[in-house]
Image 1 (cartoon, one colour):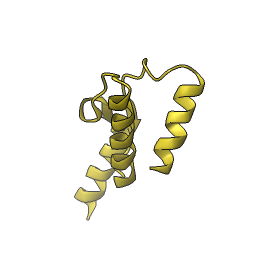
Image 2 (cartoon, rainbow, N blue to C red):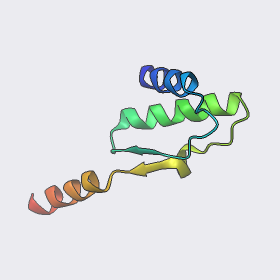
Image 3 (cartoon, one colour):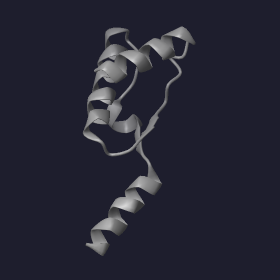
Length: 72
């Protein structure tokens, strides 16, 4: 939630709250919390944003995880 507050404050400061389409993130669970909190803030302000549709996974991170799994 702390990350979400910082992200939201930055989006607000630069007038970008209505322009966000997606977030590029790795698979860390704290990013799940972040995207859920951003989704809630958008809903409170009638901003159309879906965390599930708007969270893009970082391809190099995903490939790294797959390679590590194969190597184990």
